[in-house]
Structures are given as structure tokens and as C-alpha cells.
Image (cartoon, rainbow, N blue to C red; front, side, top):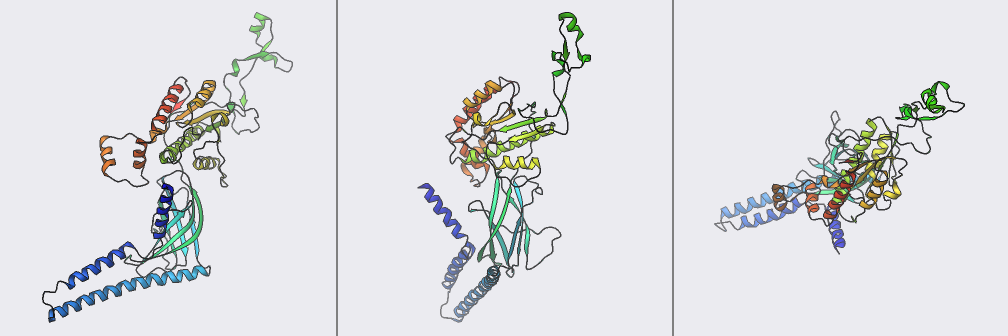
Length: 456
């Protein structure tokens, strides 16, 4: 029943977007008509010359407003008709570009829009709205011209800095074009198909130091350019064989035990820098329709995984990120971009748990979260806690505690729908809150018994 009601409300909101008149026009008509009736009743001397002049002035004012509104309506209608005819003849070009690295704020996406030809209403405006991800709608916006861009009355071109706080992939399918008059009373809408895909990237943050050592895989078939030393082998000995160098015989041991042994030298292993990073998006909790876990918790975990990867790369390792889910990635030649996309497009899943996902022989670093089952974590840590570096991400830290002033603000101030303050209030009363906090405490206590784990 709730889903049906929400779908109905959503359909009504979408239908309102295509209504050719705005709330300003309805408000103007109602207020003007009421003011006109009230002024007609203010005639102190009816059937006199003053009353006739007063009535005439009211009619002139009403006629002037009617002409002004009609002019505004015709300018918008003309632009809309011309644009519609151009589109039917397939003469309208629409392009959307989403540059990757030219936005200062990491939670915003710069969108470059180009539409031509288009006839702008006289003294009016052209506004846009983006349709993305299964009929999700952006706010209505106007384009900002870029520096050095030439003015062209037949071309609509500019940029829009789109606030998108969630770390994931977005697919823009259509663009809604609004033709509005200078009074903003009328708004004619036309929808253009346009395909563009982009993703919001995790932020780069300072993280705790991670101490990890490469672990050789069973099949070392990929060499690296820079040779890395393998520690500890210069103290090891083995029995002398025919092909061994006699200069490496340890004569002290021979004099004592009459055994020919040779010292194994420190070697340059071409596979020693290879390091496997595992990050589990598995959840052992029922998180259906839980927006707190799907939005701020998931973004926090993706940011932690990405910064863990960056730190390992900076340490000089060749890091191989092993994802726990299949992601259809675009053609990316850069390894870092491919890993970044894989992390960004991932989501919480219930198909592959830690036992199925983690390969202990290969894993050097494993990133787990508060949603992983404690029993699975305990089984893995107790067996490989001294060999594998575990990075534990406490998801509850993404929702900071509230002070008394924040409680008052939550009680009396209405927050925006996409604000993290809304998620903070929902987390306080979530039915999973106590269970997740208890799970975090148990995992944290377990990892405290080992030296390698890192708790974020």
C-alpha cells in the first residue's frame, strides 16, 4: 500500500513537470482577480464621473496586464513550436559531456550541455532538467557560459555543476528543455534523448598506516619491472648439491657436524611485490529499504577501500584489486581508473560471503566492514590473522554523534531530503542500530588481539 501511494505521488510530481503554466501564473491570476473585485467595491460615490473614471482605469490596467501576459505567452509558444518542428525534421543536436577531473568539489559533477538549433524566447529563459537512472529527475537549472565562449542566439551551450553526494555510477538518459517567458508564468517542456554515463569518485583522505607484505601466489606468471627483495632467506641453509657453488659452503658447520651445507643467498624475486587486495561488500544483515546503509554507509566504505588501495600503491607494491562482484566496466587503459570504477560501481551484496570470496593463499590485505558476519570474520582471522592484514571499517563513524543543539535542530528545523542530517536522525531510530554497533564492538575486540589489523 505504501509503495502504491509513493508511486502515485511520484507519477503526479512527474506529470506536474509537463504542465505549461507555473505556480506563479496561478497565484498571479487569483490575486489579480481578487484585487480587481475588491477595488470595484471601493467606489465611494457610485454613478458619478469619479466612479466612471475609476472603473475605466481598472479596465485599462486589466487590459494592460492581459496584453503583457499574452505577449509573454506568445513568445514562449513561438519558440516551442519552432523547436518542435526542428526536432521532427531531425535537425536538433543534443550532446552531454561529463569531464572527469575539472571539479573542485568531489561530490559534484560538471556537466557540459550543447543543444542546437534553439530559439530563445524574447526576454525569456531556457532551463533544463536531467533524467537519469530509471526516471530519477535532477533539479531544474540554467546553464552557465564558459569563459571565452562566443554568444550564439541559435545555440544553447554551457555548464552545470551538479551536486551528487552519492558515490556511484549515473546514467543520464534524457534532457528536459523548458521554454519560459520573462515573467516565468508559462513553461513549455520538450524531452530530448541523450545518453551519458559517469561516476562520482571516492575522496582522497588521510588514513592510518597499513603494514602489509606481499604473498606469493601458486602461479607466478606475471613479472614486474622493478625487482623486490625477499626478506630472511640469507639466514637459511640447505644441503649441498652438485650444482651449488662451493664458495657458499659453511665450513664452520662442516667442522662441527661433518655436514656439507650451503647458505641460501638473498635473492631478487621478480614476483615478490605482487599484492592482492580484497574488499568485502557482503552484508549479514537485512538492509532492505534502509537508506542509511545504502547511502552514507556505502559511500564511507567505498572511500575507505579506495584510500587503502592508494596507500598500498604508494608503498611501491603492484596491487591487484579482487572485486567480490561483477562490474561491467568501460574501456579504461589506466589500472587505477579501472580499480576506482570497480569500487565506485560496487554495492552491498548477499551472494558472496567471506568464506567464498577470500583466498587466504593470495590475500595480503582484506577490507571488512561492520556488516560482515562476526562468525565469518572470527573464522578467517583466527586462522590467518598473523598472515593477512585486516582493515576494519566502522560504518557507524560515518554518522557522527549529535549534541543537544543538533537535537533541537532536528526537532524544529526541516532538513533537505538528500541531506546527511536526515540520515543521522534515521540512524538514531533504526532497528539495526543496536545490532550493528554490537557487531562492530565484537569485531574490534577480536582484531585487537593481533598486531597487523587496522581499525578505521
